Image 1 (spheres, one colour):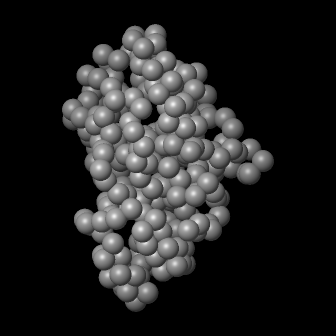
Image 2 (cartoon, one colour):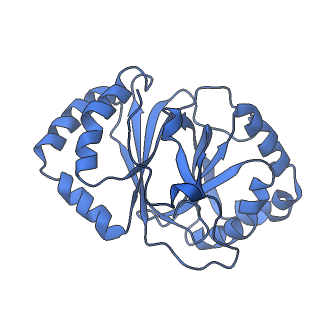
Length: 256
């Protein structure tokens, strides 16, 4: 079921394209104090380096509630394109030069969800261009990623429930949703990089202008009778509580 929502808050429609039919949501656990070092390497070398191999780097973020977590998204046209793009990058010169520096910052890089838009219109709308290599302006925007871990596939009732019951309450409280994704159960076409298999998830991405706007949204839900009722119904679809991440974009993130 398609859930209509405005794709606002990033750039005028004339300056955007919609991405991506296949997306990876990647969460890295880093050694203490190493996040900014990884971001420096990532933003300097791994954006154009990966995109020149045929993928789109959608966004990269600091987790505001975990100083040792780095979260990022990349997209592909399809699973075959994913294999070709990842092979080109990880066998290529940019990764060869900088992989030891990047890997030295990481404890774990295997927390990866393979996703597709719930429907075509649920993918990201992104600016045509990202900030340049010397960019140092930090967007005040906060991105929220909510991961719903489901007992059944998203299409087995959850998406209908989300659209008819959950989303109207969240939208009324001030949520600006920018992406709605479900598990991609196709074969991992690049097995050198593990992904989380055998899970049913829906991940909802939203944008808030700043931390205060996100706090206002959270406050609007607290004690809201419609929200409390929706949460009670939500629990019937889940195998674990929703995982909520508050994400701050890096200076060169397309999502900003």
